[in-house]
Length: 501
Image 1: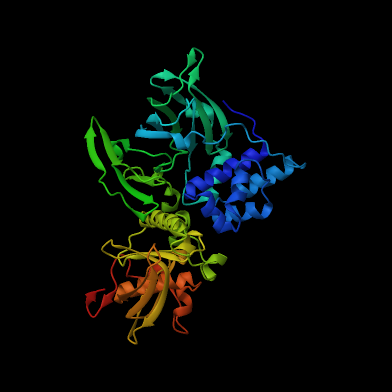
Image 2: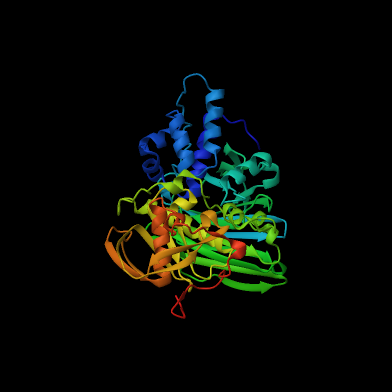
């Protein structure tokens, strides 16, 4: 099933893949890199040769770990002559606007070594023309919090057609496919509604079950699974089937065009049957462009977790945070002021960044207990935008868009703080006991919120990050951070007058 790609197709495949991974539309990416949506559209349709500056900017904003830069280098090396724009006739998602999904049902089965994903879609043709093919994507990411490591892993161990063992059918009739893009961690192909015995187009007003399955080993499949709603869909359901002996735990996050990343609105149901633990979840009429991400961990097999390498005994606290995708001290992004969002115009971009923060917080929480609560700012995951997420010790999440401290109480106290970007030490930092913070809702509404005691400290720490300030510069002169080995407050809350703050 392998195919020889043109160099421009290789770059396009990487660009589409990383846009999909980061949940960015062409318009959203255009704003981040300073190009027009038309430019990106022409690049992806082979009507425009991508420039080096675009490749570098896109690689940085999509946090692709150098994949786009390498693809562009290959493009330059292999196509020194002028680029010809010859898009394939009908190669785009021309059917997307005319197809409805009555039911999308996904089942993921894991046997302890290999994942088998089976996707079933009940498609309805709402167009005046027959539809004879359907575009699908298979994208894997073993280390989603560490793109450089993931890219290196797949360069050394590419996903192959032989191991995928793809099969497809429409209404039970086996069908074939034609490869569109073939990359190390990304496959895109057209399912063709035909085989050697006949053609099976979906005619106007008709429905049919389209089913396809593929296999990926756990050496290439990270502990996450995501569904994106690209067509109008009535019912979306997902079933995860794991060995009970692995003691799996599953959580879910949804991101839509009208809300920030939040836990699933409907519960994930859990049951056990013949040594298997089954997790089932569904939702009706999901919004177009919504993304639903399920993440899991196996309590009895930490070696299977996406960042298990950072849990080894010799790893430092900073190693663990670096391993889950947290930018470390010394990176220039931590010393610059973040770009504010223009709201509500950039609401979609803001939601995508918040979703990335939510996922990063989950990863960080998997390798450390945050008894005082925790916070994370967008620069700490490599995104130069003014948004931070704070979680209280009780688990409440606070999203701060374009925050700015407008008032501080004269009363202060001095307590130890840790920073995920240099987590091997703790430093005593003076902070006001109360702060007033001006920030915005996703619709652009301005708000002022007062935070006190421990929560004020958490929020002030994150607002500092958005202005390129690390807590070292807040410490009293002559006072230095102490090694984490000497710190005795891990896992406990800050204390205020004898009570927990």
